[in-house]
Length: 245
Ligand SMILES: Nc1ncnc2c1ncn2[C@@H]1O[C@H](COP(=O)(O)OP(=O)(O)OP(=O)(O)O)[C@@H](O)[C@H]1O
Ligand SMILES: [Mg+2]
Image (tube, rainbow, N blue to C red; front, side, top):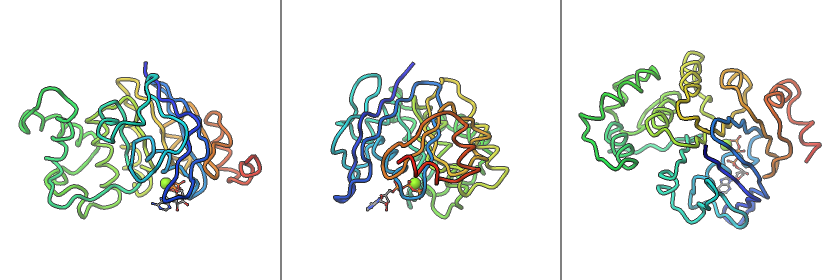
C-alpha cells in the first residue's frame, strides 16, 4: 500500500496564483477523477505534483508514504513512483522512440538492459495498445497524430508501472476504438496503482470507473464524492458546482 498526499497546496505560475489550497489523498488501488471547467488548475495540479520547475509551490506539501517530495527533481519523483501522462506530450526530434523507451526503463532499474533484451516487452506492451510498431522507430512523438501521442504516453506508463499515475486528458483525440483499447489497458492494474485521471467526459469514466471524484474551480477542490459527481456534471454542467465555490 502506498499513499500520495497533497496538503494545502498553493502553486504560482509567473507570479499568478493558480492553485489556492488543494488537499487530496490517493491510496494504492484508488482511481480519482478530477474534473472542472477549462483553465481552473487541473493540469497545473498534475504538473506541480510531478515537479515541473515552472510551477512554483508557495505553500503546502506533497508526500509519498509520509515523506515530502517537494525537494525532489522530476526524475527523482519518477523514481519515487510517479508518472505523468501529459495533456500535450512533447516532441523530441532526433531521439528514436525505441531508444527513449529503453533509457526510460533502464533509468528505473538497477540492471541496465540492452535493447535486444528489452524489445520483447516493449513490443508486447505496444501490441496490447494496438500501437503501430513503426511508431517505435520514429522520433519521439514527431509527426505523431493526436491519438498516437496519447497511446505513446500510455505505453510509457505501462512500461514504468508507477505507484501513482497522473493522467491528463488522455481520452481527448482518441477515436472510439482507441478509447476502448486505452481504457482496457488502464483497467489492467497488477500492482494496485493509484490514479488521478483528468477528463471532461463521462463516457471515459464509464470505461475507467473512478472510486472518487473531485471538481476544481478557481484552484480549489469545491466538491468531492464518488462516480455520481461525474454523472451529475454530464447532466447538469458546472453551474451547481460554481454555486458551491
Ligand atoms: N505557463 C503559464 N503561464 C501563464 N499562465 C499559465 C501557464 N500555464 C497555465 N497557466 C494558466 O493557469 C490557469 C490554469 O491552467 P491549467 O492548464 O491548469 O487548466 P486546466 O484546468 O487543466 O484546463 P483545461 O481543461 O483547459 O486543460 C489558466 O488560466 C492558464 O492560462
Ligand atoms: Mg488541462
